[in-house]
Every structure is written in structure tokens, then in C-alpha cells.
Length: 142
Length: 142
Length: 142
Length: 142
Image (cartoon, rainbow over all chains, first blue to last red; front, side, top):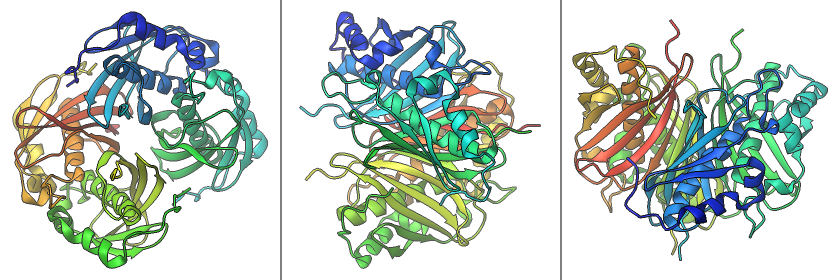
């Protein structure tokens, strides 16, 4: 079901640099773990500022939404050679994200000429699915 | 089109306190501006850590997604007397969010017994629409 | 919150003709009721083939999804002068759609140069909200 | 990434009967092809009433949305022993669906106690992805 028709244009070091580049990425603390033909994986350390429930201590859905979008976008960037603006984002919340390192896996579902669709899955360190979703992107037209 | 059949259960000071309560909310810097029967508005000061594009300086979509979810959730909390977990979130990105204070407006679309749907709109300080979307919530069953 | 910056390019008779044109539209039985600067309304007579629940007699969500997409697309077509392909569609189901005429209201949320977002609301003949949602479209580039 | 923790409760003949049961299903002409632990597949013959573009002859997105929802719902029904109401539906359109038999594959992403998320993929007879998406369902509480 994943679109692996195009080879990666970015090497690990190049994508790893893109993952760390922006202030928001630095704040999240994300880091590239693996880059494959079908998926990319990023690691996300925990920060107390993720917490939206004082009582239960779980991370806010906006943080998980960001990880779904970033994983999807990096999977696409690996194929395109650079990032693409997000048109829209849809996220399903499966389990509370409690304190601990997380992973986000990104895969391209369809890389079209004008529109690309990619998927992001957020898990805890044991691989339990916390949130997952999709985003639509506009690939650069030049 | 909005569901205003139930009166607000929270007073301004109670909702304002909920808006500031959690570490993630404090990091975002959000603050309640208005609480009405049809909508609630929060104010969001700019932070450099929102930036995902070093070149263009706009905020990451994950931050805007969080604001859509929070505005929708607070609009619902005003009616329910407390927050409700998000089942899923969908966000459309309309314009780049450049440096400057933002607003997020929340409204309840349908408050059902087992499921509630609410909307969030994120604008700049001049009212220009930056992002908007919807979330589905699970109202407490007791 | 709706994008009414562009005047309608289609007159009522032209949009009404587009609404009736295709075999799927004819099967649905849809008909244009009103065309305004902010919204368009279509009427949908009931058909037994809409039913997905033999026990409860309500219409299938795919029929309501089609009406959300069509209303959103016609609202956009009124502004653009013609239809635009749907990139993605999101629909929330609020109440069972039982036998009886329905209405679908379409409005443009944001009409950008490369991407347009529009909304559709499906109600029963008394105006009760049955389903609502949004679609993203690709406006023609010529 | 798929939730296969629960065994199927329905046998092939039972699910096949559910697939053919309702008037809308009969109109679509859908038929169960396979039922596995991870996915279910339905077959969809072409009908001229699917067409929304007189010029290009492709099916309306509402038909594809219905197939995404139905495939997801049948995959869930296989695990639950019966269908569950759809809370919301999100569909991405990848390629025009031209005349010809289609397939729809359904898989459960997460089967929770109060909420279930499942996926549907619509392909042509050669396996080319036409549309795909997700729906959220409310599993019966008894």
C-alpha cells in the first residue's frame, strides 16, 4: 500500500540535518533514527512541557499531531529531496501518551505530481500505537 | 450551524484557569479572551520555538493543530463543565503563520450524548484565517 | 469565517444545470434550491436505495459523504465558474438520516490560488443537522 | 500497524450475507471476496450511475467514500460480530476511478473499548490505488 516507486533523494545525514534544523524541531528534541526505502523513523525524547493533563500526565494531542505531520513530511522529503507544505492533517488518538521516549514512523502513501499523501504513526518505546494519521502535501512544482 | 442548546456551565474565571493549567498550555502561553454562548476565544503570544521554517519564519502546523484542538476543546468544556478526550483531529492550513500574536476561536458543532464535534479557527491579530479544523471528543459518561 | 471575497461567476440556471448533469447526480436526484454570495443549497429527495440499515432504515454514510462533497464543490464552482477535483473529504455524522427529503448547504472557507477548502452541511427538511464536513479541492490553474 | 489481537467472530458466509444485506449495498453491487485475520476484501462491479464527470467518465468521490467506509466497517464487523455506527470518515483521492470493477480492502487499525479506527483502500482490478482513508466507529457497548 505504500508508494516506493521513487528512490530516496536524501542520504541519512542530509535528512538527519533537516530533522534537527528548525527551532520547533529543536524544542521537540526530534532526531532521525532510520531512513529506508519504505519508511523513516524519528525518536522523540519526553519533555514536561508536552503535558496537557496535570492529573494523568499525558502529552497534548497537538504534540502528537506535530509528530504525525513531521514523520509524514520527512518520509516525503526523503523522496523529493526537500520538504513540502502541508495542506491538511488528520490524526487519530489511540492511547494516552504517558512520560517516556516516543517514536514516529513516516511513510508515503501516494506521491503524485501535484498532491502527495503520507502517513505518520506515533508509538511509545515498546511499539505501542499512541496516535496515527495522514497529511496531504503540495510537492514543489519546479 | 452551531450547537448552543446547552448553556455554559463554566464562568469566565473557571475556564480561564483551565486554559492556563497544564504545562503545555503554559508553554504555548495561551490565555482566555472571551467566553460567549456560541464561542470562546483564546489569545496566543508568539514564541520563536514555534518556527519550523528557518527560511520563511512561519510556525509549525503542529502548533496550529494544537490551537484548533484546544479552542474546540475549551468551547466544549464551557458547555460540559470540564474537558473531554479528543478522538480525532482534522486541520486545514490556509496561510503561513508568521511572527505575531494569534487568536483561536472555538465553537461546538454538535454536542451529543456519546460524541461531540467542535470547531477551531486560528487567525492572526487582524482576523486573517491561518488554519481551521474540527475535532471529535468523548463527553464524560457520568 | 466564509470566503466571500470573490463574486459568483455562475448564474442560478448555469449552476442548476451543473447540479443535474452527471449520471450520479441524476441517481441522487439532487436539484439546486438557492445560490447566494455566501452559500448554495441543494435539495435531495429520498430513495430506498440510500438505506444501509434494514432494521433502522437510515441512509448510508456514503450518501451523506457524497452530499457534503457535492455541496462544497458546487459552492466553489459558483465562484470559479466550474468544478474542481476533490483532494480529500472529511465527514462527521451527527444523527441517523431517516426517510425524507434532505438539504445540503455548501460554503467556501478559503479559496486560495492552488488549494480551496469548502464546507458542506446536510440537514433534514426541518433543518436538523445530520452530517457535516469539509473537502479540499484543486482549483483549475488556467 | 494493524490490530489483529482479536480473532474474527464472523465466518465468511455470515460476513458475505451482511455485505449483501441492505438496499444501498445491493445498489452498489458489492460482494465479499476474502475474509482474513488482518483484512477483508470486497468486489465492486461498475455501474454507469457512479459517473460524476460526463466528460471524463470517472466515478463520484461519494461512491469511493462509501467503499472506504464499508470496507473499514466490514473489517471491524468481522472482529466484533456485527457492524458499528460511523462517527467520522476521511478519504483521500489518489487517481480517477474509471469504468471497471473495483476492490475495497478493509483493516482494523485500533479496536478500543469505546472507539475503533479502521482503514479502507479502494483499488482498480489491477491493484492501482484509487482512494483510501479511515473511519472512526463506536463499538456496541453491550
